[in-house]
Length: 114
Length: 116
Image 1 (cartoon, rainbow over the protein chains, first blue to last red):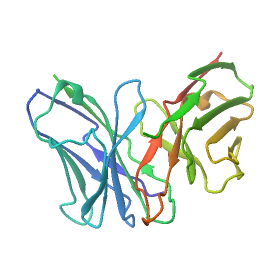
Image 2: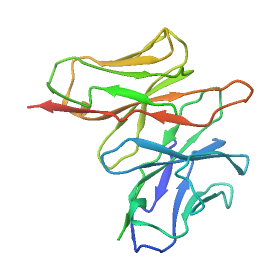
Image 3: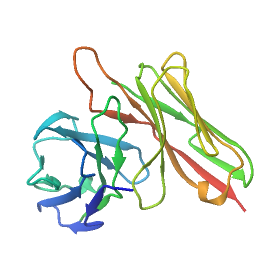
Image 4: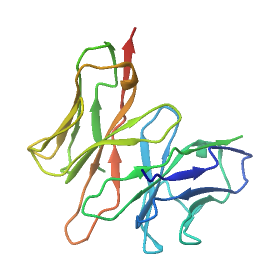
């Protein structure tokens, strides 16, 4: 069964550094998402992306965050200057765009900011 | 903003027991989704519900989309050790005037523990 893949599985970075989290969505999917989960808490929406542009974003997704689909397969989340509170699991998800189609999630990247 | 209230927060049961958890919201949702998250992994879709009143099964799992579209429950029958994990409900709202709302709201999860 096709799946969403994310790399790296764990990234450690120093405060103030830039990080790029990478995702390869399911190949025929058209809608892409980033969510994050702070340890022990619920999964929170960050941003959705369709047709090469952001379609919706949450208040968490401030100017330090950006997303990009640099080619036909990858979908990236960049954090320009990481803060301690950015430490979390970051999940990429995709859907095929059908009416109310469910999201399929990757296994996440654990980001630790020190 | 939209919020989902999921309960219970955690459950401790004996293997073989049935499990029931639910989600309520002050907002109406068009779709209810139930996900399971194992440690170190992403949420995996268990059941998707698209119509008010819909009752859907997936093996030992059964979920219902409440008539008011503001609630849903998930039942697990005859629990087994691999059922351990965190179960999240999620709601998907399609506002009028747009083709889709891309945002899905998650509950805080129900952590299921199975006692030996």
